[in-house]
Length: 116
Image (cartoon, rainbow, N blue to C red; front, side, top):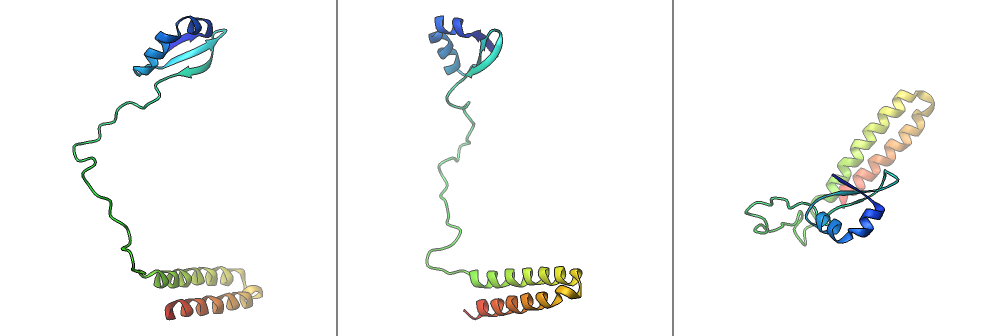
């Protein structure tokens, strides 16, 4: 990595830019301390392989299909309902009533999602 002072950069700007353009990095200094860096605007060429641009992107979901989003949401509801049950059981009897209410709400939501 080449170092150059600001004054030297002013005098040789064209050659410094040409060096950066060809891939070199130049550290610009003021009073012998680095203050900036001049480098190439583009990254070095990356080997892409012979099949780049040949493949087609495929959608994750086909158009017009709903998939099983409601079923997945119901499964997620069941999962989190079980998690909350465990948390409320660990917390003790004082909050078990709140846990029962949350459990009932989760069961109702899960059932509602499955019916739709």
